[in-house]
Length: 148
Image 1 (cartoon, rainbow, N blue to C red):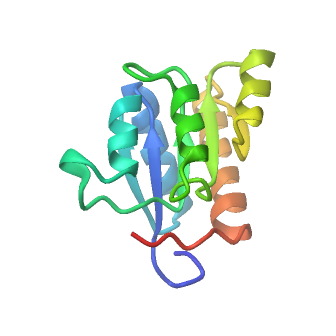
Image 2 (image 1 turned 120 degrees about the vertical axis):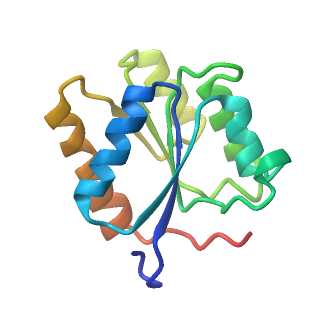
């Protein structure tokens, strides 16, 4: 629950089914009341965030977990669009990706990512990382209240 007593809404933008499953399981393990929505490509992510097509009633997330390497529209493009949109720009975006390339890290911060995290390969380390995301972004940080 957030400080207003409601579950935290998180949008996971990830195309890897294994990483989606791990993320869902890891958030269940934290015990935090989280509504985790998942989209699997950049085009779908933007439709969700802009409440278009099948997502007209989508809840604007409190936090976005974004993979960089996505089909249809790259995560870098998605990040840039989010951070240029007046309605979406205040949503914290945590880049959660396997890329450790310095160019990806620098570009993500240049595009105003709020955080850049490398996805660990090991199951236990992945769970630990999600716990740290929960501890910081959902328990410690005060997130903006988004109005649909």
